[in-house]
Image (cartoon, rainbow, N blue to C red; front, top):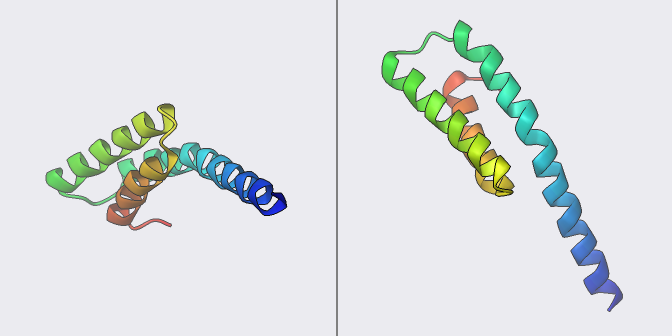
Length: 79
């Protein structure tokens, strides 16, 4: 029983950690996008992924949000 309680607590902590990173990643993308040297297709893809990430975040789907935002950051070449 104790292991289950610990597992549940860790799951909630991980979800909270994902939730807290989403806004920081969105800000990093927003800051990097105007300076990035991307073609129109790449720029559109980053904007779409950023918007998707924000929608997932608002819906509480933080792993999906982090995945979309991570792809956008990858295209921009930021960590």
